[in-house]
Length: 234
Image (tube, rainbow, N blue to C red):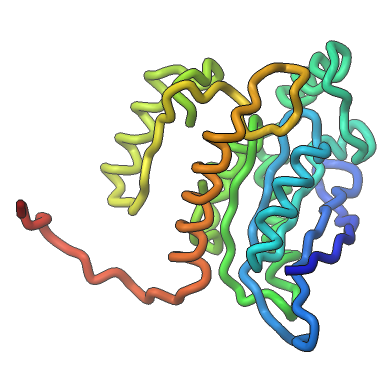
């Protein structure tokens, strides 16, 4: 599927215009085709080459992808370099930015997707690095219908993972929870300077992402009728 890439600058209350990079699928001969939307939240380096390529992969499967820049209150939308100064700046800005500002970014990005006449109104979210946390928070917006840890990811302690899993379970949320052996932080980032990219694991996880989005975003399942105890069968 072909892809058109554009961007839009959206005013924020937190400060500065947020640039949202749009990756829109295109089917020749079908100018009014509609697609679900997906938020792709970037790593601490903003929308880098690996993030854009990840967004293109999703868009090529028939999703309008919106990737917001993270640090519009502080710096332009240009990506930071994968070096020590870039890493230090990204780590500094990620904690300087208020959580409420991250949430506003997500809300405005969903608003933009839903404003597009080519969007079906079904929205999902995913992300890498910092973006994984932001995708999780984006799911607090009831307009987001689906959102997408690695076993060796030291950024999320085991106690934190257990808390997330238990909280989702206790709330009755329908979810899958994967901890992939040998997957380090940013294993999906196809950039080799940090030595963490694992294309085999990234490929498998991408297929799981597509399965979830295909099941939840492409189909209108209606309300769930599942209730009570599950039948114990062999």
